[in-house]
Length: 113
Length: 114
Image 1: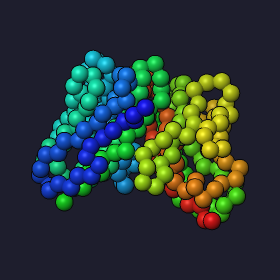
Image 2: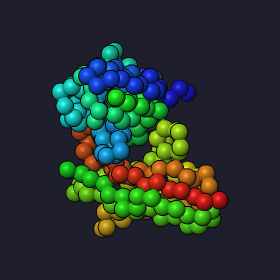
Image 3: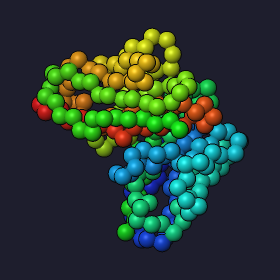
Image 4: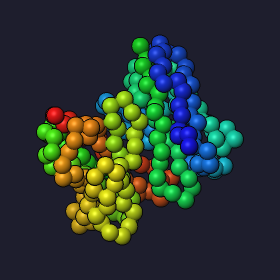
C-alpha cells in the first residue's frame, strides 16, 4: 500500500518567511510524528499526535514552530519567521496505535537562505 | 532522559568483511530498541527491532542485533557486507511509553568498498 508522503520534497525560502510542510500518513495509522534531521543535531523529535488527544509538543524548539492535524489524518508543520538554523530535513512518521513500529516519509529538505 | 550513543561515526569496509556497529542507550526502564537504515537518496527504513524475548533478533538483508541488558547495548552485526549495504545506520530507543517517540543516536555512515 501507499507509504507516508510528504510535500514539498524540497523548499528554499528566505530568512523571515513562513513555510508550511505537509504530511500524509499511512491510511489507518492513528499516530503521527514529526522529526527533524540536521547536521548539527542528528534526528530530533518535534511533535506527536495520537488520535484526538492533545498533541505532545515537547520537542518543538521554539514558539515559531507549530503543527496541526486535521481530521486525524493530514498534518501540517508550520515554521514562522524562518531562520537559517531551521535548515534541515523534516521527517514525518506514522504508526498504528497498537504498534511501536514507525514508518517514515521521504522528508522535506528545507533550506533557509 | 533517555539517550543513545553510536560511537562509530564513519566505518569503511571492503566487501565480504564482517560488520559490527555499536549502540548504547541510557534509560533505566523497559526499552524497545530499533535499527533504522537510510540508503543514499532514500527514506528511513526499519532494519530490525527488539521488544522482548530472544535478545538476538534478525532483520532484513542478513542483519542481526543482540540486546545485552547488562551492557545497555544493542549492537548491529552482519557477517559479510555487500556494496549495497552502503548507507547510514541509526540506532533508536523508545523508553517513554507516553508518546512513544524515538530517540535516535547520531548515526553511523557505512561505506563499503567493492
